[in-house]
Length: 329
Image 1: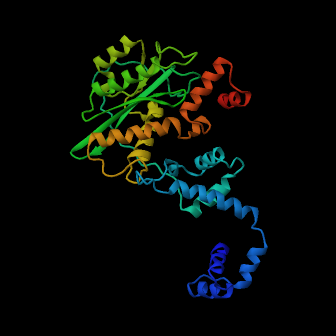
Image 2: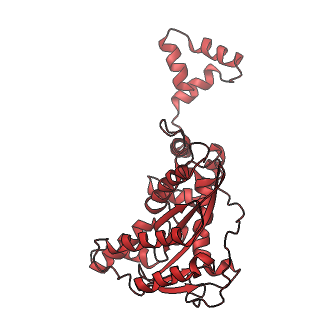
Image 3: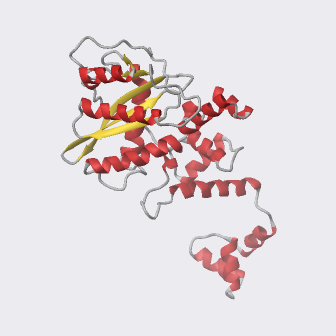
């Protein structure tokens, strides 16, 4: 406000004249108040709040090319606090973040209800559950989880399959298809194998004997898929029928994808998802953000790629003590 009045003074208008004009427009300010503002420094809290609010408003601004805000607007108070701490506000408290998010009109994403897509296999012979709901490992390539979900498009559905490494929660690969058959989930698996076998990292655990965990859907219990697992040296693991908790880590990623990328108000959408190509474009953007920029609470508010880099640095002996304690936590 003081800046506006100063601009009017430069144009030849007296302070009193400007204040009278502002009052007629509903802005209650007097010449005495203006002079008081000019003579006093703003409180530190006011300055800090203004800077943080500017950062929040920048996240909400629509990109000129895509017409979408930044994906970070999806975060709630805890995740937004972690993002702000990484971007110039290391000492900000959760209470300040919550208060300023309310002022900025930011609420974060609320997850919707899950729709079941698993078609149970009629064959009662299948692999045992080797994870037993223990979805954590101490190294990459010890255990992968996989699942697929659907995206409504014109004339039907597009199906998207993901393969996730339990250590870092990194999405190693994905594949899309209009029929939900064994072929397309197998494609996602082959891409994950290619990804890991072509990484040039020291101390990478070989893919051979990696536990491959899925639900009891017919796509994953088919003879073709089972033979592929055996040929690639993967150890099959399948949860019990009708129990989503046995594949909860993969189910979580499915839910995040549906709520963060597919939902109508998603910052990753530019319009109607009419074809499989529209879905593919959506998945490409979301998976890159998920792996490289999204802060995960289960990873101590690091990204999947950061967690893997920390692991490789620790194995090579080049990890600082502070980073090593963060990885251990």
